[in-house]
Every structure is written in C-alpha cells, then in structure tokens.
Amino acid sequence: MICSGATVNNQSPPVRSQTNATGQAVREREAPLSAATTDRRIRRTRELLRRALFSLIQEQGYDRITVQDLLDRADIGRSTFYAHYRDKDDLLRSAFEDIRSALAAERKAVEQAPGASGQFLQPLLVVFRHVEGHRHLWQPLARKGGAEVATRILRDHVTELVREHLSSQFPRLGRNQPQLEAAVQFLASACMGLLTWWLDNDVPYSAEELYAIFRRLTTQGVRRFLTTT
Image 1 (cartoon, rainbow, N blue to C red):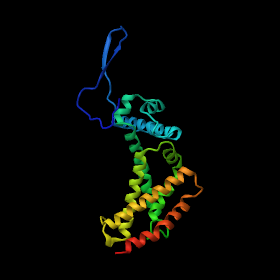
Image 2 (cartoon, rainbow, N blue to C red):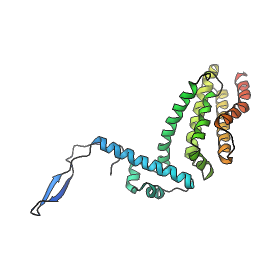
Image 3 (cartoon, rainbow, N blue to C red):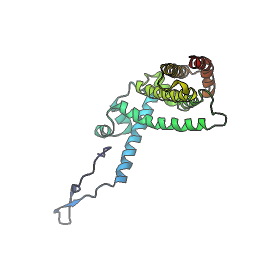
Image 4 (tube, rainbow, N blue to C red):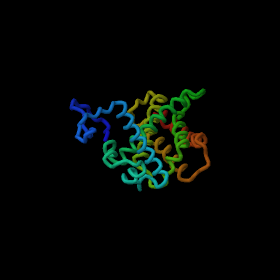
C-alpha cells in the first residue's frame, strides 16, 4: 500500500520470482514506483474516500456512517484507509480543507465587487452564498444527525471572518478587546443560527435575501455597541 508521508530509503527494490523457458525460477528486481505515480495513487485514493463520504452524508447523515461504509462505497481496503486517515472525522476535516479554500476564493471575489468596499458585514455574504451553493452537502449535515466537526469548521471560519472585519472597521478597539470579541461571538452565533434555520426549514430565501435579513437584524445594534465607550 502507498502511504501518505512515506519516507524513501536506500534499500534495494523488492524482488519477484518468475520462471524461464526451462521452468527454473528466475528472480528479478522490480522497478521502484516513481514519485509521480505514488502521488497520483494518493490523490486518487483520497478523492475516492471524499466522494464516498459526501455521497453517504447525503443518503444517511454523517453520524450513522461507519468506516466500513466508507470502505465499501470507495471499494478500498481497511489498511489503505488508515494509511491516510485516523478516522472518519479526520477524513471530514481533510475534505473541508477544499471547502475552506473555496470560501477564501469566494470571499476575495465578493470583496473586489463594485461598491463592496467598506460595506458593513459585507464579507459574510460569501458564507450565505457558499451554503446556498453547497446545500446538497450542508442540508444533510443539518438534518440527519449533523457532524459537529463540520459545523465547528464553518463556525470557526465565520468567527475569524467577523473578527478580521470588525477589527478593520473599528481599529481603535484593538483585536483582543472584550467589547470587540463580544460582538464577534454574537455575530458568528447569529449567522450560524440563521443558516441552520434556513437549511432545516427549506425557507424560500436566496443567499442574498437571507444576508440582507441578517444585516437588518444585526447592523444597527452592533454598530451602536461598538461605538459606545
């Protein structure tokens, strides 16, 4: 099996036995796998497992999934799975690294949009758009025994996004001031609560409409709180 992070040593490559024309055993050395081949196999195995995970989440929710379910769906062996991941939570965290990268790219696009500069809470629009665009994944997580680790990953991202935004909007407060952090936690919780309600109830709002509701509910109170000494 090919393992992620395997080290290369200077031992001779493995040997295999063949028979020649006279039936005598002939031992020849196998050519070692190239680094490119190894990398492709690692990427392929991990992609198979991620696809298996997301398809199973949509079918039965995260909490009911077992490692054996993943092995059966991806059609790989148990030792191969554990060569790459400690458990299903580790696989989920790895899969969400791709989502974290997508969020960062989406956020950059939102911030560069015409008229976006300086708008209060504008960076959070990307979160609402992201959840809408990945509803097929987030809705089963919310409804069918949602994964705590997935929710925590999204909340952590939202919290840091809010913290960076408020720090730039209210520089006099300082990043670690309790007053600023209270506003950060309030906004992150409000955002996550609204998103969960949206997913749980099939509320017919677009991402932009829900974001507008979020801003109407929070902007005035948060601004007043942070500008009051």
